[in-house]
Image (cartoon, rainbow, N blue to C red; front, side, top):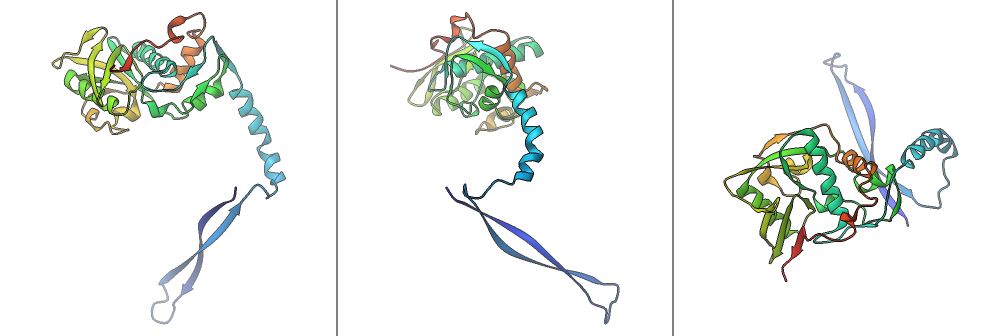
Length: 250
């Protein structure tokens, strides 16, 4: 497949005008478009390949490290999936290490970037594929009424992965929203773990921007790797079946 990339290259010519103002200098810059065609038929730059080779070897060695094993395949799906449950649980674990009282974890569905992780050995590189972004675990203080709004927002998107919470989707709205098994009280404030991307209004979550935030330096990706290293995917039936954390109304 051929692909054209257009780049603008600046061609600068310097003109000195000395007649009336010898100290004035004018930079006359012209631009022209250059089409660079890239295709599989162009041979590799062997010099560049040699230059990058040691860096590639080091990167491959790092990314191919096995950090744990899984007895089940992890799959991405709506409205609930074991991959999403695992990610939300990992984020909740990380948040609870940062602060007491965190009850809920929410991971945006679009943030999970691969559809499937087979059972067996899990490498560091696989987790980077799943979560390539440098998103940080963030704790929010979310009033109950905004939490319900958040759930409706997730329901309109056919469900996002959660931990510590359950809800039912009916006609694009969230019903039967429970936090730790109890109905949400609109007058209470809940500690909710999300990524900094969501906390700052990403994925149309502007309604969360007013919530009190507790940022951290913990990458969500690292939280996932810690969860794998802990052995959570071995000898554990939690992720073998769905748990009705998020489901469509019958």
